Structure formats: structure tokens, C-alpha cells
Image 1 (spheres, rainbow, N blue to C red):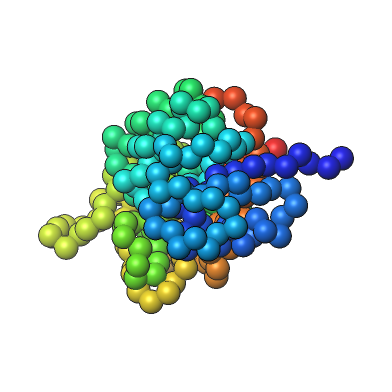
Image 2: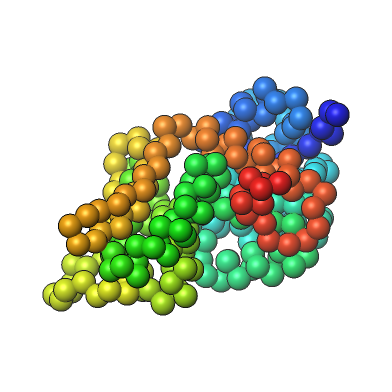
Length: 256
């Protein structure tokens, strides 16, 4: 049976991810971009582009968002008002914005994921099993992430999500430590350390290190192209079409 067409609005259509997704959508017969939103537009897109989401008059089944944190508040208001589900991929949101996402999800379907790749979302599941076995045996947990020099937030949303997956198994008792430069003491047991590397054109690398006595177990994920995130976002938009209000994640897409 043929899948019905999914019509989407690309929020942040002229950014790197927006252009990447537009290219992927062009080769996918099950989905089409009916409108874009971006503050900067040169008129080169095959769909109409609005400077602000509130100016958009075109109906859609879902919105894919790869924009900037500053644009997310207006996006959430629009999604609730127009009842358009949203695949929310923008990272670096403030605590207040995350609370707004939660509130909005009570009124409209929102899929929020720090990382849209299949591999990362499978890793989130594997980490739970590893944590349950290794941490009680005295292993320390450290997370190292590497990204290109243009990325503005650190640590990455994906690195935080990996830590959250570990900490969930530990009853959220472990503290996240981002800077040890001012501390002169041995490492406490109940902490998860983060290190962020920024340079060049690194797409995304994440290592979750379980360091024990005389042995180390490392889970690694490397993204070689942003296309892995774009493909995930497209699948998420197809999944979200027609879904009732609620907070969804990529695990829902994988398990469907």
C-alpha cells in the first residue's frame, strides 16, 4: 500500500541542515516541502519562503525545525495555534524554553531529539545495559564529544542526552561536571565528566567511556555526513503526521 504524501514546512530552510533536507526530500516520493521559513532568503528555493513562521499561510502535516534557539518560542506558539506537529531538532535551548516545549507538547505533537541518527538512538539504549553492569562494579563515566568549529553550544545536545541515558539508570544521582580546571581534588564517584572539542569540519563524534580498574570500555559513534541527521528528521516527520498531542522521540520512530 502506498504511503500518503506528507507535506512539511522546513523551519530554517536556508541553513546547512535545511538545504540538506530539501535535497533529500527531492528524492523521496512520500514527502514534500510545501513552504520554508528563514530570515535570509535569496529566492532560490522551489517552494515559498517566509521570514517568520507567523507569516506562513500554507498548511502542512508537520514542521521540521533546524533553526536557532531564538526562533523556537515563536515556532512553538505557531504549532499550538495551528495544530501542526513539529520535529524539533534545534539544540542549545534554555531551561525556560525546554519547559515551554513540555507545555506545548500537551496541546500538539512534538518530537524532540538531541540527535536524529539511528545509530545514536540505538546507542542510547545500549548505554543503559552497560551502565547497569559496569557502574556498580566501580567504573567511572566520561563523555568526550567533538564537533566543527562553527558549533556554538557545548557540550552538544547529543552528549547531554547520552549522559542522561546513563544517569537515568543511576536514579539521576550523578552530577554533570563540565570544567575541572579550578578543582584540586580526586574524582568523586558520582559524577559524569564532559569534554568538548571544537575544530575544523568535524561533523560529530561521541565517545562514552566507562573507565574501571585495569580496563576501559568505550562506546563510540561517528557521523561522517549531516545526511544521517536529515534522513532521521524526514522519517520523524512522516511518523508524526496525524499523531495526537504528546512528547515523542526517535525511539518511537525506531520502534514503530
